[in-house]
Length: 264
Image 1: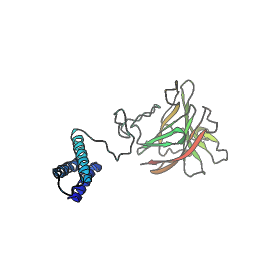
Image 2: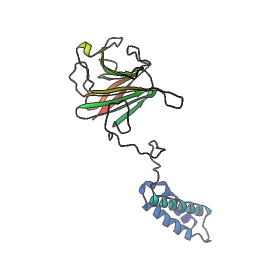
Image 3: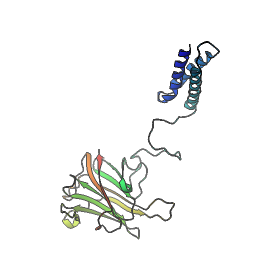
Image 4: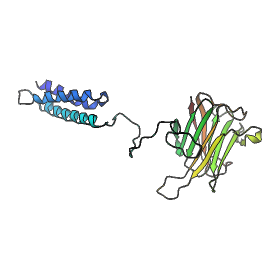
């Protein structure tokens, strides 16, 4: 009898550990717990361990049943960040895209966080790619499309907001020269491929706010027809992100790194 009660007690406890099976499991656990406790009157061989486990199993089963009926219990297997204010973020890509320098939750379908406080957002349709880059700086930010790592040219979009909050954006081409000199597409005989864009710098005004950020948003065609632009294809596309400490686009980047954006 003691062994049987111990086993039933373990089963009753186990019902709490697998809540993803839904309401039927805790109901079964509740029934098991009641049956177990009905065996509790003094009978030879009943172990203390069985009684303790049975009682705990009954308590947890009842608790979970009540929670399941009255509301939704938290998913203990969910590792995504919580939202303390109870506000649910809209689905990715559900917010209308605008080139306004403000990256809204749900505005982009994809997101990647890099070192040095750099965040890249993107999505695409059949014709266009939409890019947002945010970095902890008051200087310029840039994203470059490349075909191969450490070789070939760089199709670079760079932007910043000056001290008067006026935004500036540049469509540049970096040759394979050792110094990686970037030149304006239009000066090379190409064209500016930015259809919509915005560059905004959010300046920190007190210690309670987040650090100052520069945000660059733009839209361009996947294939621009410009010899100084790299065609973007479905699947993985290599990028280089870079961040400057000032508005001088000729200065070397403070931070620079590689990444991949996956297009549909």
